[in-house]
Length: 442
Image 1 (spheres, rainbow, N blue to C red):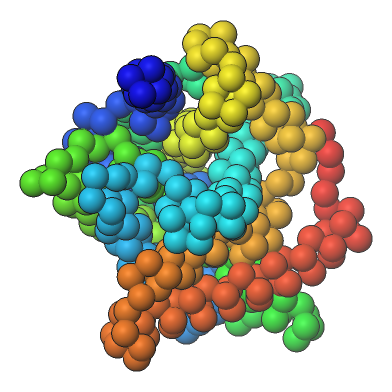
Image 2: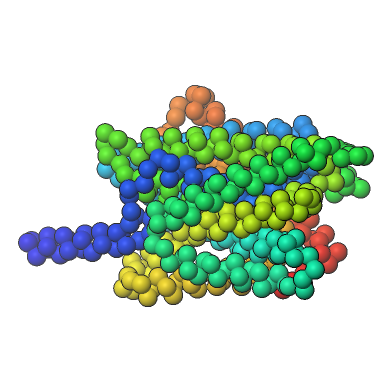
C-alpha cells in the first residue's frame, strides 16, 4: 500500500516536472496587459490589409453587416472561452483540446478540436512565412527600385531564419516583448493604411458595384470574401493557452484579468479593422487591391515603413500561433513516446516545424489565396460556433432562454459561414488554376 502510494507520488512529481517544462504550463505569472497584446497580436494579422478587398466583394450593406456581426459574435464566443477556462473548481483547461475533451469526451473531443486547431495554427504560420517574405521583398523593391530583382524564395528564407532562433524561447511569457512590439506594429500599419487612404481621397471614377462580369462569379466571390473576414477573427485558437499563463486563485480567478485584456484587445481590433475596411473601400471602390498597401503606392517612404511594420508584426504573430503547436508536439514526444525533455528535443522539434512551414511557404507562395477556403473550413468552427456548442453541452441552459437562443443564433451563423465560404473560395481557386495564376517557387 505504502509502495503504491509512493509510486503514485513519484508519478505525480514526474508529471508536474513535465508540465513545468512544457511551453503552455511552464509559466503562470503573466499580467492582464499580457493578455491584451497577445490577443491583439493573434487577432490583428496581416489579413486586416485585405479587408477593403473583402468589402469590395461584399458591397457596402452586406460588408458593414458582416464586419460588425463578426466582431460582436467573436467577442461573445471569446467571453465564453474565458469563462470556461476554470469552470471546474481546482482545474484549469489550459488548452483548447482539453476543454473539447471535457465537453465531448476524451476521444471525441480530441478528434473534433485538434485537427481544426492544427489547420488554423499551421495554416497561419505558413501564411505568415509568405507574408513576411512578401513584405520584405516589397520593402527592398521600394527602397532600392534600381537594384537587381531578388526572388521571393530568398526573402522567405531570410524571414524564416529569424524564427529558427526565436522558436527556442521556452513559453508565452518569454515572447511577451516580441508580442508587444508586434501589437504596436499592427496598430501602426493599420493606422497608416486608413490615414493614407483618407489623404489620397476618393479616387476619380470610383465604383462601388460588384466588379465580376457574371452573376455566378459575383456570388462565388461574395462567399469567398466571407472566408477572408472569418480569417481576420482567428485569435480564439490560442486564447485558452494565453489565459493559462495568468496566475489564478479561488479569490482571484484568471478570468478577471484575462477578460480585462480581451476588452482592450477588442477595442484595438475595432480601431484597426473598421477604419481600414471602410475607408480603404471608400477611397478605391471595387478597384482596390487585395492588399491595401499595394493600392497606396505613394509616398514611397511611408509604404516602405508600413511593410517593415508588417514584417515585425508577423514575426510576433508567427510565434503566438506556433507556441500551441510546439506544446502539442512536445507533449506527444515526452508524455506518449517517453522522450526525455530538454534542450536537444526542443531544438530538433521546433527547428523542424519552422523548416516545414518555410518549405511549404516557398513551394506555395500563393498560399494566402487559399485563405478564404481555410477561413470558412477551419477558422469559422473554432471561432464562431464551437465555443457555443461546448457552452450548451456543459452548462445546458434552459430551452428558449436568452443564453440558449443566443448560442443557437451564433451556431447557425457559424455553420452557414463554414459551408458557404469554402464553396466560393474553391471556385476562385479552380479559376486561378485554370488561368495559371498560381506559380510555384516564385
